[in-house]
Image (tube, rainbow, N blue to C red; front, top):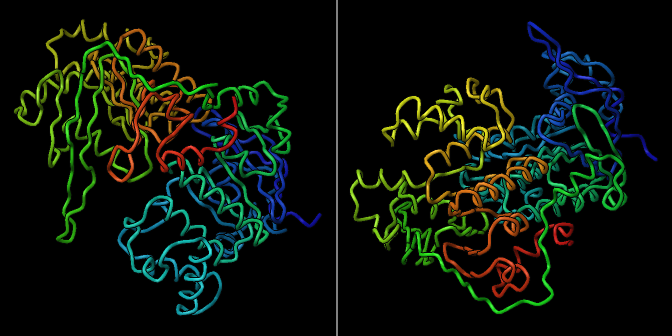
Length: 533
């Protein structure tokens, strides 16, 4: 076997505060060779990101680091900033979870990437442009010349990830660290990026460290899998072996936590027998924006009913109109045409004072638990805010309700005096759920509520939501691109594509016998392991 491109031996990383020392990476060793993909999986806080930052030299000087990290045969621990700057991009590069953070939003692509490439390859600006166009073609980015003239916001998340991969290819990078590169993408873009990474690694003999909490995607991509927990590697194996036989109990828990589409022997006739009354009705909803003097249709004649006590899933790719529709349903955005009817009341005709009363009956849980909670407010105030704004409850009554709901979501009373920064992503999402339920709303809208969570936390949140819905009878509108997850939470499903509802029905029937081509594409894009019973 050839020499390793990335070799880590007995790496330990720790941080200190005034009171104690925190060990975040503990005695980790791993190697990655040419054309090899190593998958690193673990829950939030396991040490994955700190490991990757150490490989890039980005936490050196801010932490205590012991052990060895060799990049292309050269030790980087103790290296100067100048040495690391030369290595970054040319020998080792990183692809982040949110591709937008890798770009300056104020500059076109041609004003950012060519300068980076020219510096790393020691070539002219004109040559850098040519190399980038070639790399854009390599990653199947449409109209490469036009892409250079665009700003980052004019691309989708999947396109931006392709651009970052193209830059790594053009820089002739030897090692790529991909930290959750597919988490923010819909299922079709996820599948495309995984396929692209796999082909690029093999073609150019790149070494890839693929960090993710998506075990299904890891099975599609990785040659070997390392499981990380509490800063330590607790299990390592070839991907095929790991898939069928796990040694550690936590690894088995990860496998058990994978959402899977369950097969049914015979697809029954779709009969949506719902006895409960209609809670919310969307009638001919359309939304048109004006851009550069042109009209752009985001939603086109959307029609559906949501019944009291039901769990309905809204599924579609990025840009399909899911979130826009959700914002219209709660009237944070007004529709261009059509009506939203809640409990027989047409909302568009209502004044703002009436809308406030309507919103009292609506709770919302957003995708990102890190941005949905006010960092300056204590948890008690975050949860209590809807009660203070929309009810006439006494201070004692508010305290009683907050205390009750915090226990319902699996947290303790003592947590109420803390700030969001003191909690993990899963804990923050529990807090967001508590806030959504505190007013005892009739409808909860969940916009990708588990997308940024690791597998085990995701499973806990889904169980919590199902338990709360069963206990309270609350109606759910669940927005997601994860069809396997939808199968565990929603009885009925709407598939939206290009602003239109193109398929609907009972979830089991749609997933097992889709009628529309796009629905079939979505299902085919699901990693194969998630389809196993």
